[in-house]
Length: 122
Ligand code: HEM
Image 1 (cartoon, protein in one colour):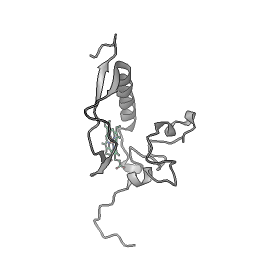
Image 2 (cartoon, protein in one colour):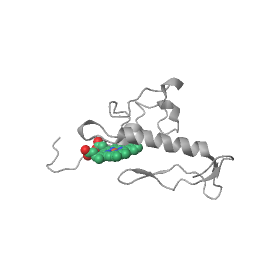
Image 3 (cartoon, protein in one colour):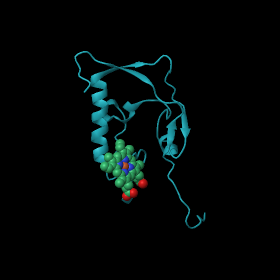
């Protein structure tokens, strides 16, 4: 195969992360599949394992990966700790996807965040 000069080539991460040859039930929402302690796979998300590379890999991999992992974990922990999350009946969760430059949710994810009693929201 000849790839013409100046072609912009992109890795199809969606196809890799939905490959049934790698993932059991690839479209199922099972975050625990990535936790070794719950029987999931031990995946190096920092680019050492191309079955899942949210920060890219190789020379141009994300230099902010460690900061990203620390801050996102912190935000999620704070949001779960400080709020109770309830479904928004007017806007139910719909997991359909839409392919743009990256894969996005077709409909925005909406939920009601209710401060937990005794928890300061500042
Ligand atoms: C969860 C958070 C983050 C995710 C998922 C993410 C993901 C990515 C991805 C996929 C790339 C492209 C890698 C490639 O081309 O192979 C990238 C590049 C990059 N990221 Fe991040 N990133 C995150 C946080 C950050 C943070 C916190 C910083 C800076 C403080 C940062 C700075 C950069 C820079 C400068 C590049 C370009 C690297 C280059 O082209 O050489 N990222 N990121």
